[in-house]
Image (tube, rainbow, N blue to C red; front, side):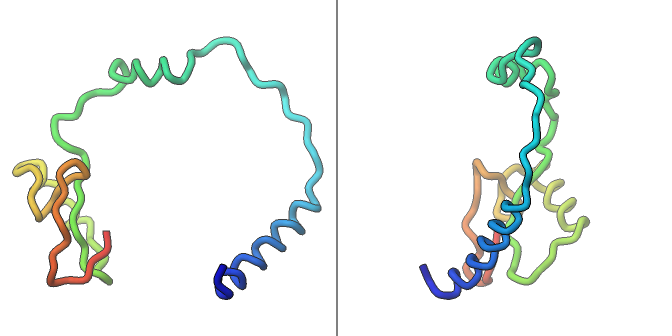
Length: 107
């Protein structure tokens, strides 16, 4: 482990140990095991309680390093994506495009 990482983690670990030493146990009620449905059954039935959207609700795009996208920019990208589908201007996880070579970007 590097020295800088050790210097960062050591105070956090010490603080956690000190905080844990001051904890007192508490009594929790027993878990409720009656009623409800198993999680996997609920997830399988999600089509019954989710409505299919007519248009994609979100999109992705490459952002130049140091640039903070505005709401208007996001709206423009989303409307473009909803109208034209995936393009280098706006795309999705399932159909992405590489970052422009001429700019330093972050996703």
